[in-house]
Length: 186
Image (cartoon, rainbow, N blue to C red; front, side, top):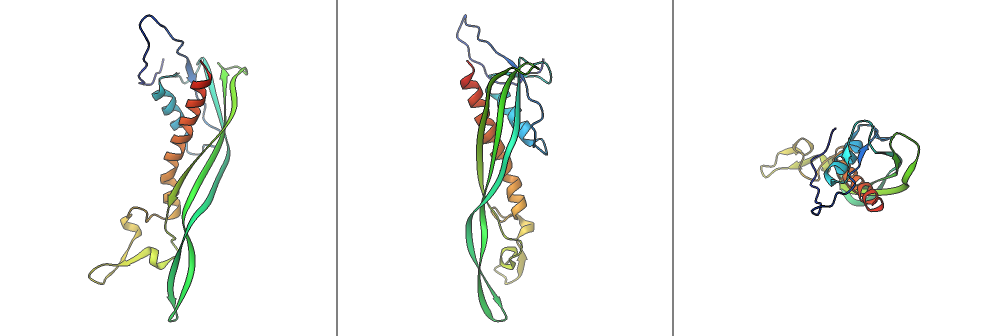
């Protein structure tokens, strides 16, 4: 039997039902990061032991919606042919993911809980790779330096900032799933 190392408190003389659970690969989870976060959250909650096959329950999850929205903008003042142009560039976004989670009994089709629709989001800042001012700065010696190779905090291109926010987003969503299941099944 495979188990996670979660703390389980039980009063003396009281044996609570402690189920085992399987978590099949989540539909729509391309790289397995979300499946890993759900498994980690379940194991660390102490609510259920995780098994590869044959658990008391099976948690089926499907990705429903995977969206992004722009939250913040900034002015980019560039001189072109001696004239200052004022352009607006996006610099802050939000990633939103919604899932459907259903708890089944064993390997069968009997629904124990759900389906539940759950959603989580994560905000992140980024730089516009098309903006010269976002890619370069002038150091105290007056020499132009490229910014992106140094990875200075928020100065990540969009894709890198999005990737960095996904672990937080999946962790939040996994915890919501564990909270709903453990609070509803007693």
